[in-house]
Image 1 (cartoon, rainbow, N blue to C red):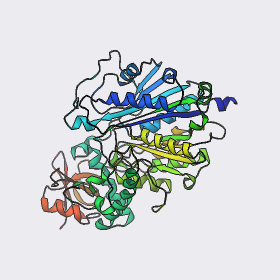
Image 2: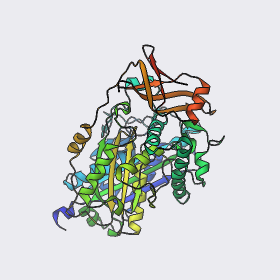
Image 3: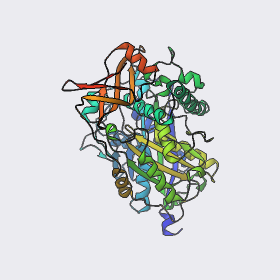
Image 4: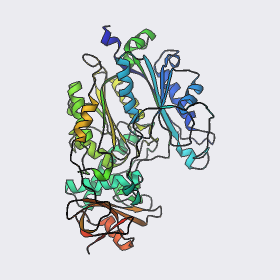
Length: 501
């Protein structure tokens, strides 16, 4: 091997756990440790865990571990020189592959372990350890944090109910609908057809959490079993977070994998990876239907790898909600009717969305496909918060020409940050129009809150709620309210938008 060949990063092991059988004693760390051991065994040689120099445990939503990486290392019986933890972000599994690939290529380390998981199905059922409390008692300064841990929403967004993914992604969806020119009924049908393709993959994936077949109509139509959550999204369009799942990856330098005797047929090469974020707060983005960051990342991946999007065999676009899929598809230049599946797992709505660790499952599935046909390639995209943080990676069965390609992420981010800026009217008064909107529903399928992003007649954007009128909220759930005119008032704290009749 030449020097750059020896320093080429390779994925050599992947482990996935989907634990459907009830177990009141199950904890997230139990599952994560199982996945890590499975990833080590997948390398096909003994002693892999003892080679780990750097370990990262992805953020665990519940319960609160004082030092999750230390807990994982203790359970695995290893003492890596580095132990890291991540902030919240569904992009972090892919982010970590790029991070470790760069460090391996630079000669800083030879073996890393990435692992994460959740036991939320057990905990949310009330049969397990619960959603709070400490399960391990590691002491010390706590883990070192990798990644962007900024607050995802600003005070004005929070005051108007923009606090959770189920409240924000529907706003992006309605903006997409407006760009596509669909009426509400037509667009729900489109969403049903999009997610029926995801469901079909999950049906054939033994590791998917939900494998019952669903038609496009099953997904799109509002029924007692498929209630509305945040219009236009029915329950079947939302990520499933109540899962007991974990996944782990082992990465090495090619030299270390060779020296350990790991079969080259098991090697999968990261070909390129990059990261970027949008203008951070949703209400400040100029076009709520597009992702400039994903578009720029895609361009950099093509330049670094020489692979155009149409040449990539396997795709997994992050799918917490349909808007995330469509915005990534559009930004990457994938046609709406491209025959390639947009997921290798079934997506977060059917495979399951184990907190911040979904991407690790997607990468493991991409690895399996490339191992089965080493002439193929794959792409994984990850999303953090509200289409805020993006991480994309390319994979293949052959090494990248010339070694691991560094990408100037600072220059990439500067390009995105130079985009249009929106002037915000925090306390808005006057006439305006709706840019996008959603209606939140409770578990009884009753409308409870209308949320609007709009523009005043002077062009400034506002965030507002609507009157809590059931007839109005029902109409907004079913009828066309994009570009609807009305009046905005402010009570000193919140904006209230009342549409014209």
